[in-house]
Image (cartoon, rainbow, N blue to C red; front, side, top):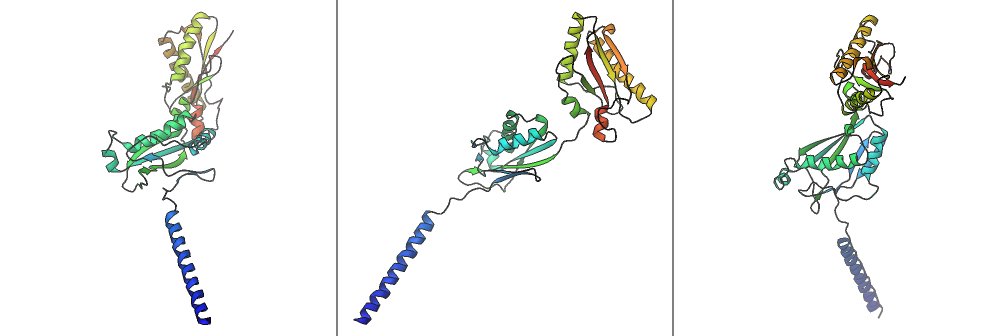
Length: 285
């Protein structure tokens, strides 16, 4: 009787252990998490550390999948707006096999442009986002999806062209700066300074007692006499262009300041770029 009881106890323990192991195995198989693509990290030093979900595009497609709102791209847009001198490079990737399935010459570039358009629509400046497209055999796919993006940052170089493009026309009674490359008398033409010139000519035609002041400036490179001469020459070139476009000479007042009125430090390269300018301003009498 005692031996039989022991056998029943051993058998019960064996059955219990077997059932437990079997159920645990079934649960492990049945409830194993689905594989996921690794997140796409967006990092700019200690100031920005965020990540996007790994599943961003369907295979052979360029349309960005719907993201939760607010998304990491919204955070990225806010960061760029608050740091206007940071340049973001977005690289979009595709496999050679993917590219053959589409009519797009560069699927990766189209994927990067999806991100660029999202950021521009959120208010980011066009100057702050550049894109590239590259083929790669290393892309991972899970359930017909891939990440296909990478992000990097660098500082924007401030030069005369950048300064000119960031001069925005307000009205004729707020100064507008025209910018020049080093040693040049030809200012960089932009839509905003063209608008200023058009509207100034129209306004002065109707208000001929008022004057458009054209003030030339230089950086501190060169002698005082040379800078004064160069600033006058730049102002005169601008005056002559205005006359060619219909302005009367008597509406225009030329002033040469040389390097006497800097708006940025001349000991910095970008400061010298900012100081090489001609200022346009309508002064009421």
